[in-house]
Length: 306
Image 1 (cartoon, rainbow, N blue to C red):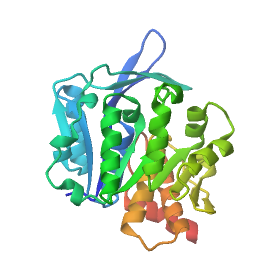
Image 2 (image 1 turned 60 degrees about the vertical axis):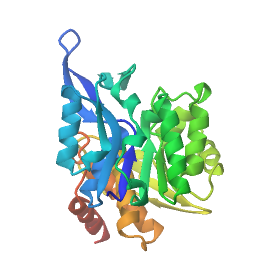
Image 3 (image 1 turned 120 degrees about the horizontal axis):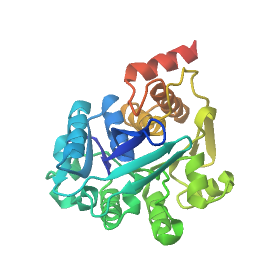
Image 4 (image 1 turned 90 degrees about the horizontal axis):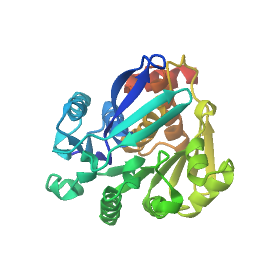
């Protein structure tokens, strides 16, 4: 059974290519939780993604990519429903919308997961748009509460998207997940989007007041990241890299933090932070959401320590 499991949505990004009137569409496998699961697996932790995907060509691509990543396929469910699509119709700046009324992801059933898995898993990750899509969101929140009660550690990354409206039900879900979490990860952009203003310091204070005991990772893009634990905090700058793109960097950073916590539990918080930041930087050296190898992260850490 996996030690780590990410639970939520896997989807297909349809990304516009070419000029107006001559568009082509590039299909890429994705989904915030799914990206974290395969990144944690790449770093050497037995992992799974739990969610539902379609039977069509998009679902098959997700299944094949999950198999290639070494994820435990017993946790993926295939249903006869349409795929969840994220249509990225503009890349500069990014603009997108989701197609997914009654899509496969909404039909995920936790009762169909392998028997005994809850007694084996150590960490469970939640986040992404799955927690803003009913009825799936309600099932996931109930599962997070059940896992927490059984001693499983919970990590949460809201990964802000426009579907997350605090005034339309997501606000209660956001607070409930923060209160459950042992680790919370947010970016500056997440805080601005969720709370609809640029006062990120105030928004972070609000978020942390809901669960002062959670380890809180705040990413600042090229300015690195800050890790908060109680009244203490540490900041780390990213190693200098040639950036191919930043797609998947946040998910790789989250995965690297979790892998460090699982594989090196006696390390100091600042060491976990440096590993996380190096993970995000390593992902930036590759095109697309390509999870880094442990050797990629260790090379950056070693180079910066010289």
